Length: 306
Ligand code: NCD
Image 1: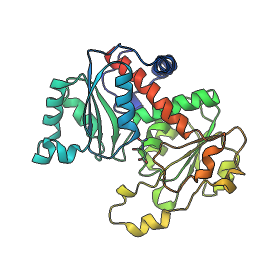
Image 2: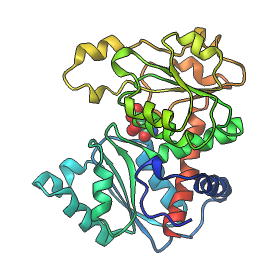
Image 3: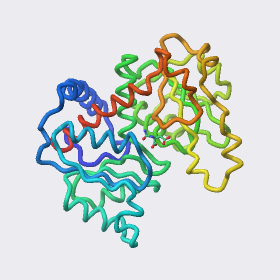
């Protein structure tokens, strides 16, 4: 399926997801065999204005595994001409003269969309502030697909900073293409899920509710998706951040409430919201998500550049 830019999970369709999942599964074998040379003549640029470990490196690893080459600016605000006051559209127009695809992360909502307007090559949104993170949603959905057999009929519990977390926003939009049983939002009052996402679900007749009682929410979960408080988005509202901190923590005692077959997810990085002892629980899927991220991004690069 032809796809130019990947900006929002709103672009996705069921046939597109089927194709990504099929290709990602094939990429598991390609990566295990050491990779391929399919993208040997292609160059990918990563342009990151915000910190990242997984997203940037997994895109880079994906490109390397497919034989392609990589150029990287991981402190774009300091180490690119943006620091000299260059307009983003000029920067992107320039980078698109060198690269065949640009992976972009910025603190500004809508940044990737603006970049796409200036770019002659595909733009992949690797996070635009509290906006979206569509490729994370793809790897999350692929993980649910493999571990639980799909999203249909599942009760998905989202926990933590649902106001500022872009991964949950993209995941909800993606999951709305299916028929989940319901979404359950577990968040401190200051960081509740935003109205636009609630409206998105209402328009598509997908049930959702808020549930402040964490054990009750866990008790009937098929998937529990934990998230970090996005400290960087609180600015000088330090007291508000402190009030939310530690409110919902998945530790060994909490695990008692979780059904035996549930899947525990987290986009990472984590702070204190999942205790380390949980890592050895068979339901912990967050490092599997990391692995799946590589396969999904290999699939996407192949689809965009193949
Ligand atoms: C997330 C992000 O950057 O939005 N991380 C990721 O890409 N895997 C989540 C976060 O920063 O909390």
